[in-house]
Length: 67
Image 1 (cartoon, rainbow, N blue to C red):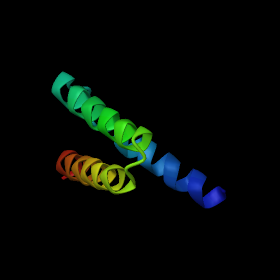
Image 2 (image 1 turned 90 degrees about the vertical axis):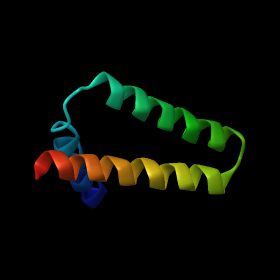
Image 3 (image 1 turned 60 degrees about the vertical axis):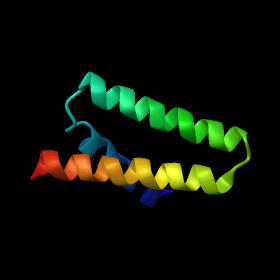
């Protein structure tokens, strides 16, 4: 649990570096909705792919802001 808390704290610090731009928030919300829909549809592969896409995009965005 301590390892999870540490990773979560680090992630939150990085997410706080992202400016709150409407287009970013809308895009993120669309991705979250797609993940929820896939989970509710019991489509594990679609949910997994959406999470990969979302996490990859968020990582790229963070790298861009931190560069």
